[in-house]
Amino acid sequence: MPDRVVVFIDYENVYWGAREAFHPGAQVSGRMGHIDPVRLAKVIVGKSLTLRHLEATRIYRGMPSPSLDPRGYRAWRARTARWEKSEATVVARMLRYPSIWPNPAPGKRPHEKGIDVALALDVIDHAHRGAYDVAIIVSTDTDLLPTIEMLQRMRATTGKPRVEVAAWDAAVGYSPRLRIPGSNVWCHWLHEADYRQVQDLTDYTR
Image: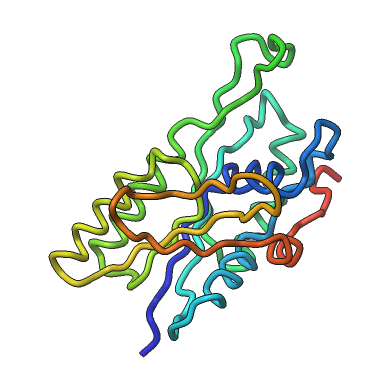
């Protein structure tokens, strides 16, 4: 029997990581860095050396406010609808906006709140329910390290589940990934060719 795999994607972290790895420079279009999460999950599972089945793709992302940013919300809704049509599950939390919006101070922009917690809780909840044999966390957010450590303790006690991570492998410079000191957490390195395969250049604002 193939191992059941659930891929948990921290979307904004993946997006900004792709921009840093493959689109350096200040004048890069905002569309650069966006990806199709389901295609990405399939690429990751396809890299595995053992027999595996992609059980589910779960995406975690902040949601623009329909009242404060209606254009951004419409684009977010259109993109999300495409993901859900591909049978992905999207977990969203409203973005937190600067106090003066839409004219914030320089460098201030809406930011996510609680996305890492939602992802972490889901990973553990699905593990306790036996929903997967392998969890692959696609993020470099170190707030998720305790989640990985908990899954490792579960595996040491019960023999399952297995936890792995995935990260962009930049051609030049440092490529961050989630690490546990003294522990070997398998990382699926995603190269530029993988990124080009899953890149999504669709303009969802239209």
